[in-house]
Length: 82
Image (tube, rainbow, N blue to C red; front, side, top):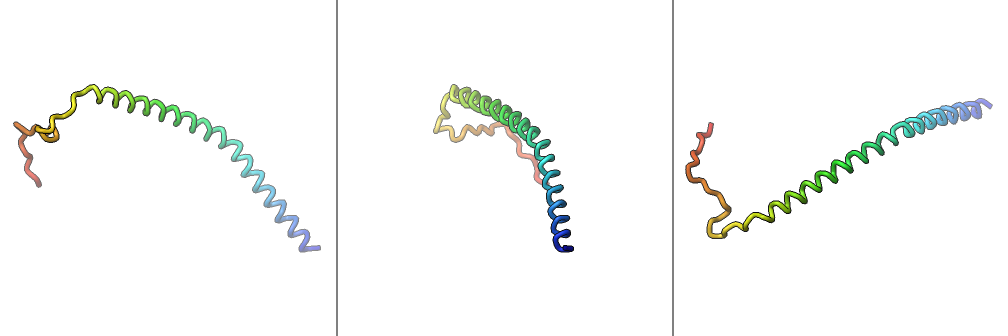
């Protein structure tokens, strides 16, 4: 009967650990849900900003291909490298 008692003790220990884990999950899940909601809101705001910036960028005239990439280095002095 000793083996049966040891098995019962192991199962009780497992049950206690699982109950503890379940309690932690019940505590953490609402926090994770709220964090997900908050981050989704932040992402939506950032996406709106990107869309606004794209619309704003589209109002600028297209670059002149004869002028290269638009780099105008006139008057720029190179700094010495160390």
